[in-house]
Image 1 (spheres, helix red, strand yellow):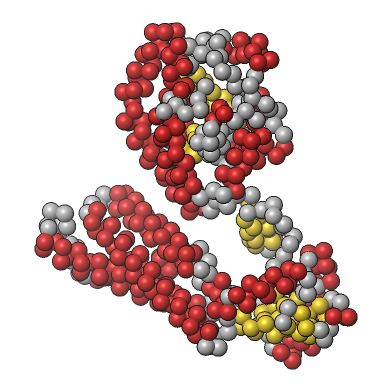
Image 2 (cartoon, rainbow, N blue to C red):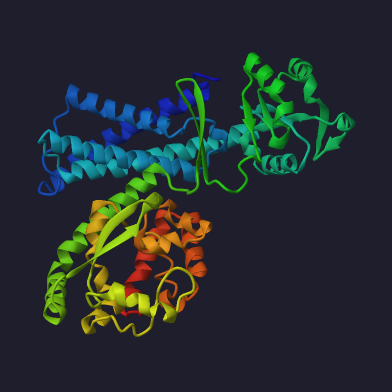
Length: 475
């Protein structure tokens, strides 16, 4: 195991530290200049002293430390510029929020411009630096420098695909010395443009002769028992081994390996959500739900009054559903049906217009006159904003099922609940009640899970607005 960073990694860390510190210094000078132009928006800047310099150096150190935590300095050959920029935004956002929280706890008022200006300047500076380093590294590798000699174990289709990708990305700096195989008949052949050097049983001889810097295994995991000796030899020599495996197939979206007290633990994730993305998603939920509750509180009071005048209490319908990881949660809606709606529902099940475990009925006789209006424009959902604020629900996510609906789910339906359920999702913006097959509904939810991103959430939120305003597809 390589326990220390490479020389290039250290250079990248030093460059990042200097760039962030320089960005903070430039933002301070800029702020000082803007103070002369508009002292109201840009108050008197902090005096330059040893403490301010130490704070700048500490923040620069934290920036590098957080980037390192996101593995931004590990095997950068395969790192794209987009990944670099995303890491920059993640870390700068975390440092900005951390600074705000610390200043609040210490009762130290920092002008907003003193926080936002360094944020944007550092993002620009470090972005330029990363871009320059990226193209410089590619240029150096194109010229034949800083390249790695690798040997590939395998000769099958997975090996072919890996070689094709490497050849298309010459700037990665991987020089393939040859292939090793488990089939003696293939030794000496040329496959995919490279010579089959020997069988991997003779890897000791190959390592001594060619001195490779890495071994890349591309054989099927069905043959792993045959290459155990290869792994042991590479460990004894200190040669890193990378695995391009078919073991996980297509069933996982994220695989993580941890070593806990000497135990190797492999964790399988079935969604593409990462911690920083979930953090931003949760932040969006809190801000939007809190603002919406404040702005819509007069409308909610009017709705409560209308329900009371038309059918008395209760105003709210206690909604017991199954939430994230199939755990029960309690939420609330404005009551839109008569008080004994659940009992009447048993008599109406024969008229259900939805195939599967969900109940839908046009002109449902249980719905109150005011309830039809509330349901058409999704106003009955407004109390669920409290559940979003609490964290039981999200603004965007698969619709949570009632317990009896969940009990009738097929196994594949249950993956809907591998993420936090929400108020709106692809189903709401794709026809809602026009979809009468629950399987189609479930497929839309799984499509959302498999293709999830913050941008997709934002798109769904914007598409939900006209659906709600015009009551499209509601029953």
